Every structure is written in structure tokens, then in C-alpha cells.
Amino acid sequence: MPYEVLARKWRPQLFEEVIGQEHITQTLKNALLSDRLAHAYLFSGARGVGKTSVARILAKALNCRNGQEANPCNKCTSCIEITNGSSVDVQEIDGASNRGIDEIRNLRENIRYLPSHGGYRIYIIDEVHMLTLPAFNALLKTLEEPPEHVKFIFATTEPHKVPVTILSRCQRFDFRRIPILKLQEQIKRIMEKEGIRVSDSGISIISREAQGSLRDAESILDQVVSFTGPDVADDQIRAVLGVIDRDIIFKTSRAIIDGDSRLCLEIIEEIYNYGYDIKAFYREIVGQFRNLIVSLISQDPSQILDLPDNELSETKKQASHAGVERLLQSLNFLINREVDLRYTNNPRIALEAILLKLSRLIEYLSFDELIKKIEDIEKRLNRPALTQPNRNLEAALSEKGYPAEETQPKEGKDLKEDSGEATLPEPVKHIVDIFEGKIVSRD
Ligand SMILES: Nc1ncnc2c1ncn2[C@@H]1O[C@H](COP(=O)(O)OP(=O)(O)OP(=O)(O)O)[C@@H](O)[C@H]1O
Ligand SMILES: [Mg+2]
Ligand SMILES: [Zn+2]
Image 1 (cartoon, helix red, strand yellow):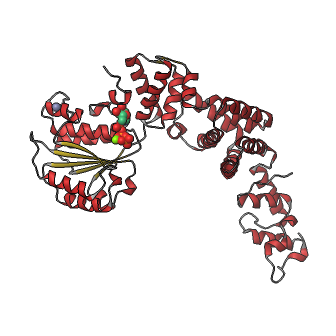
Image 2 (image 1 turned 180 degrees about the horizontal axis):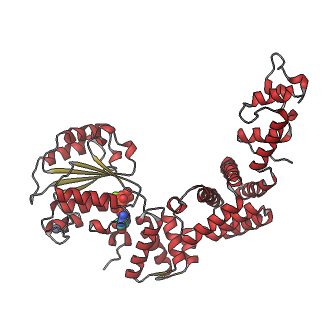
Image 3 (image 1 turned 45 degrees about the horizontal axis):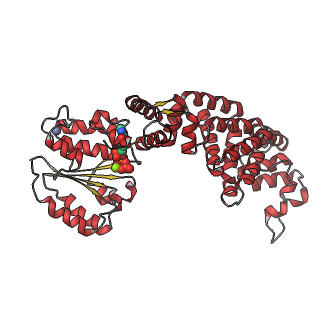
């Protein structure tokens, strides 16, 4: 028997087998049971999260006579034909390659015929956002007065490209990315049935890379197994995927937080020698600082972060060690410096420069210290410096003799240039810079 890829072999055939989309499958089952069905459905969501699978289950359930609890039987002729793609009543149309008005006109011609075995004629249009405007207009006419025996199921990864006139005539379901824990569970299930052996950390790597798409997770597993055979080592997964070891990411954020510039350089040497993509590594580091911040600020970080338990606890540990201000400064710095990497011919050196500076952010004033110094000055000036715009602050400072002759701007000259940042006391200059989004070294 020819090898069947995991994604096909493991296509769900019942509503209950669809993972992570219970909000949709339950609603559809209820509609089927109570016979309150819409004429047209729009399934939107990322790649490989179950849109086509649910469309087919729904189509089967609509036309199956032996179904139970709203599920298709998957055994009758109608069910089998739909599964094989040979049903005359259920047509799957690829919107990307049938975009024009002619295809939609054909469809409208077809719609008039009654279904061969009773039930419904069902049109599943995939990537529906690819249709041309005239095609949409032709489709709209049908959607306005659909024959009783016709159902439409549209699927799209880009619902914002579907005209509102169409959207408003469909019942819409937004498919979610599948949470990492559910991806992991499903991968485990598949492995057991397929006789593949991967460690838990290996499963974590695969699930992370899949970014919420079960199809991607299955394809990755396929790819890895074809390289390694049924016994899969973590290193082999990383090698096939070119992913960076998560330990290295944690080691890097730890080095940055500890201000350990030397270790930062050593890590860069390591990833460079290993042949990792420097820009991909940078994206991981940016993501890592975002995770650190979320773990400190969010009430329930596990909901947002979708990290395995061991990583979540290490993230929290590093984050509370660094504190939110440091982390925000670091993330801000990383985002601002990303352009340095984008336009360089030597990403390694650019990365070294960025991480060296970043690991030395600790030497700059902390935000709390700044606030304290500002308050000290405020007390001395007896003016609410923080709540005033910079200009007032400068004026207030000049009034108090910082320096006195600059109180009024000279005519024809810019106030800022004139009063001169250099004349501001150091801590004030710092906070002004921070408010303006610059982070300035004190040396
Ligand atoms: N929610 C899910 N539950 C179980 N398996 C799933 C799920 N989503 C995807 N899969 C797996 O991925 C394969 C592809 O899923 P499906 O074709 O339904 O995705 P899709 O959302 O239509 O993707 P695309 O936007 O690329 O068309 C399925 O055959 C199945 O193996
Ligand atoms: Mg699909
Ligand atoms: Zn059936």
C-alpha cells in the first residue's frame, strides 16, 4: 500500500475527533439536531486547523441517513463518496484556481439540479477570498435567494478579503489555533498508533514549530520520521527543522539579564558555528523578552504564553529576577535595533553589537531610580515636574537658575536648541530621553 501522509491518514471523520474547535463543532451539532441550518457557512482561520475537515464532516452529516447524534455514519454510500471526493452532490471548489465569473456562472447553472440521493447539494469553496469581484457579485445573487436544497461552505485563511455583502449572508465560524497542549496530546496519540518514538521534549519542539496548526505538526513529524526512522532523537528534530535549542534561548536571556557580555559573545559564537540563522535567533530572543514580560504582567500567563510547564517556570523565574522595567527597556531596545540586522551584510557582528549593548543596559539608571531622582529635583524646585510637558520643565528649571539667562527663548531660535539639553541635569535628561523613546548610555 502506498504511504499515506499523516495529515491525510489522521483527518478527523467525526465532530468529536476535531481537536480544539469545540465551540464550532458543538454549535454545528446542535444546529443539525434541531434542524436549524444556515444556507451558507464561512469557516475562517489559520492553515491546518480543521476548516476543510469540518466542512466535510458537516457535508456528510447533512446527507447521511444513518447518522447518530448529528455525526455522519462514514459507512453509507453518500459518506464514502464524500470522503473519497467522488460525490456528485458535494463539490469542493478551489477558489484560488476557479476565481472567475465563468466558474461561478457554471456553479449557478448546476445549483438548479436536485441532489441525486435526496439531501442537499453542497458546495465547499476553499480559499474563497481569492474570487474576483465579478465572481463574488455572481455568487451574491445566489446567496440572496438560495434554493432549498443547496448549502454553501466557504473556507478562508483571510476573511478580511471577503466582501461584507458576502460575509453578512453567511454564518461565520472562526477556527482557533490549536493550543500547544492539545497539539502535544494529539502528536502523542498519533505516535503511539504509528509506532513512532519521540521524547516529550521532542514533542514540545514539534508542537512549538507548528504554531497552532495540527497539519503542520503532522507534516513535521512525517518529515522527521522519513529522515530518522521510528526512533527519533531531539537533536535530529532540531537538525531537520533548523530550530534553535530552547536552552540556548533561555541561556541568552539569562546572560543579558545578568549583564554577562562575555557569555553573550560565547553564545553567538556557538550558534554561528552551528550554522543557525542569526536573524531567526534574533526573532527568538525578541519573542523571549516578550514572554518574560507577559509572565510578569499577565494574571494567567499560561493562557497567553502556551509554553510547556518547565519553560513557563523558568520564564517566570528570569522575569521576576529582571523586573518589568528592565524587561520593557530591553524589548524596546531589541525592537528598535532590529533594523541593524535587517540591512547588514554581516549579521553576526551586528548581533554581537546589539547583545553587548543590551547586556549593559543594567549599567543605565533603572526607572525607579530615575523616578526617585526626579522626585528629589521636584522637591527642590517645588514644582510637579513629571506632569508638565518638557518645555515647562525646562522653563521651571531655568527659572531656578539652570541657567537663568535661558528663561526666554531668543527670537528666531528653537526653544529646545536654545535651552540646550546639555544644560539639563543628568537624570532629567535621561527621563526625557526615555519618554521620547531613546535609551541613552550614561557613558
Ligand atoms: N482541529 C483538528 N483536529 C484534528 N485534526 C486536525 C485539525 N486541524 C487539522 N487537522 C489535521 O490536519 C489536516 C488538515 O486539516 P484541514 O484540511 O481541515 O485544515 P484547513 O484548516 O482546511 O487548512 P487550510 O487552510 O490549509 O486548507 C487534517 O487532515 C488533520 O490531519
Ligand atoms: Mg482547507
Ligand atoms: Zn453515512
